[in-house]
Image (cartoon, rainbow, N blue to C red; front, side):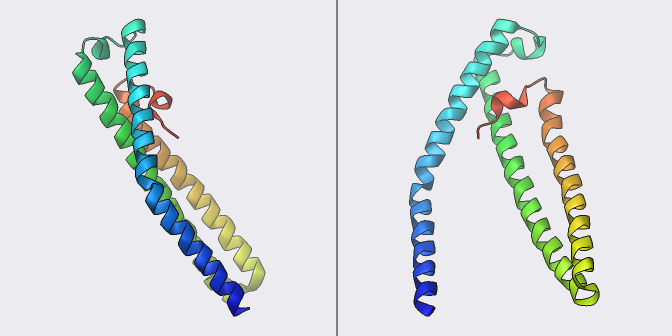
Length: 146
């Protein structure tokens, strides 16, 4: 049993090291995709001309605006997932604490309440993440890089 645990920890450590080594390449690929999406969106804004405020900007201004908006969207998205992950941990341990008093029924009720709260938090953070971009007249889906 101990050998299996040691092998599993070794594989986990190896996975973490490989992920860390490939992080720079993934970041460079993501930056290149973001650049291409920003360039394409700039062309669409110029071609369609639906937002006169964006159409009046120079290429450098528009590119800076779109790149910073894409970066802010990415940061807000990461922040949202970290908060939700922390919320899941808190909800799970809260459910365990309730389970010590009320058994499995209390555990299930606490998990359901935690899930509802986390769903509401996800919706709130998602809307708050999109509001500044839609106020500028930007299409969020064109800036999002998965």
